Image (cartoon, rainbow, N blue to C red):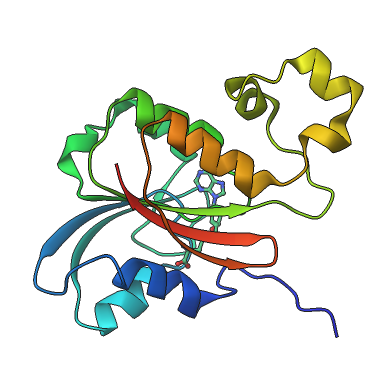
Length: 178
Ligand SMILES: C[S@@+](CC[C@H](N)C(=O)[O-])C[C@H]1O[C@@H](n2cnc3c(N)ncnc32)[C@H](O)[C@@H]1O
């Protein structure tokens, strides 16, 4: 039977990538940009980690959510107020990352990167790697191949050389310090 992906598919892997980097002794201020029902951080808290979370989601799934498109609110936030930014998106949170890097955020960053089998990568993301829109449009299959390698290259260009990663097929759960 085909597995249906929900908000919290691979919850244990998402939790593990976070708890393997964080310390249960510290208090963290988290900016959760794709909070949803908050299952990941609920599970992390249950393991004894101390976190204070600003919860954002475009849907009212948790009564404490600030309900809005995170892209609208992100530019006005002082990211230095946070120890952790969580980008547990459905696809590639490229636009959010561009804002985060432009604001020179320092701290922990957790990213979910999913490229569906025939999924296109964002054109502006490929542009950042030096592929022109013309090239991409001519042979899309070539430039949309192997998204995770391209994503690692993108992070490297942003100064990130160490990434913890759990990958399951086309789904990649990552944690890093930036
Ligand atoms: C994979 S789910 C997040 C699951 C969540 N991290 C948890 O622990 O339960 C992705 C969530 O992102 C939200 N979302 C997608 N695009 C968004 C955006 N631009 N701004 C805010 N929320 C968004 C969706 O409504 C969905 O709840």
